[in-house]
Every structure is written in C-alpha cells, then in structure tokens.
Amino acid sequence: MIERLKKLFSVAESEPVKPDAHQLAVAAIALMVQLSRVDNQEDERELKTIVDCAVKAHQITREEAEEILNDALAHAEDATSLYQFTGQINDHLDQQQKQSLLESIWRVAFADGRIDKYEEHLIRRMADLLHLNHREFMQARHRAEASAS
Image 1 (cartoon, helix red, strand yellow):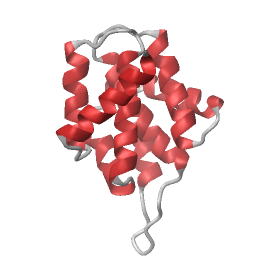
Image 2: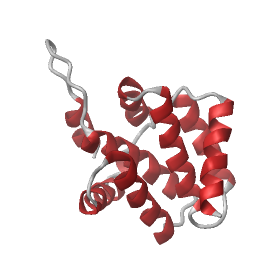
Image 3: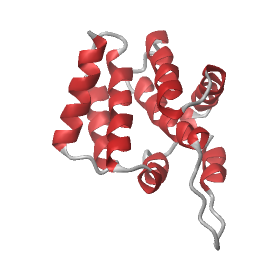
Image 4: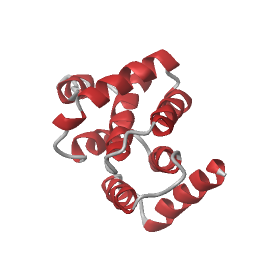
C-alpha cells in the first residue's frame, strides 16, 4: 500500500503532475482505514461509510473504492505514519477539499453510532496534519454528525 501510494504520487522532475481522483482516493481511504482500526473493532458500517465517502468525494466507482479499501486494509499494519498520507493530500487539495475530507473521516467515526476517545484524538491529529484549525475541525464534525442523525 505504501509503495503503491508513493508510486501514485511520484512526479517527474521536470513536469509536476496533479494526481487524479483515484490517486487522491487512495490517500483518503488510507486515512479513513487508520481511523476505523483505532478502536480495534472492525465495523462493517464504518467500512461501508468509507466506500460511500470515496465514491461521492472522488468520483470513482464503488468497485474501485472497494478494491482500494481492501488493499488499504491488507496493508494497514505497514503504515508507519499518518504524514505519508496527509503530506500528499496537503500538496494537492485546497483548504475546502481538506475540510470535506475531514468531514468524511468524521462520518466514518459516527458510522457505528459512537465516538471512541481514541477516534476523536486521531481525528484531531489528522486535522492538525491537514493544517485545519479548530473551527474547521468542529464544522466538519457538526456537518458529519448532522448527516448521521
């Protein structure tokens, strides 16, 4: 997964290339998978939410999203840092797009009907790494919470 992500985000020295929706979906799904695993309970509702968010936000098919999800789950143990995912996202998404991603991450957390203290802490770390301030963090949470109810 990490090598795939590095390959997807590699750029030619002379001509930078903006990643496509599929490449950004890989990084976004990787973050959501890390969140889904933080409470040590794999929940089908969270996994379904990850796929739904990826399809909606990145204009990929459900099949592509499920394939990326399965790959991310298989390689989740290999991830050593959130920065390997957030660094690339910061390079290619604007502030509004990063806030939408954080909202999707919150939706995953709300999918099982409760927010674990470790989930909230990890989301705060992700928001910091995505250079989102507290107001943006709370707005994303409120929008996700409102859509969950």
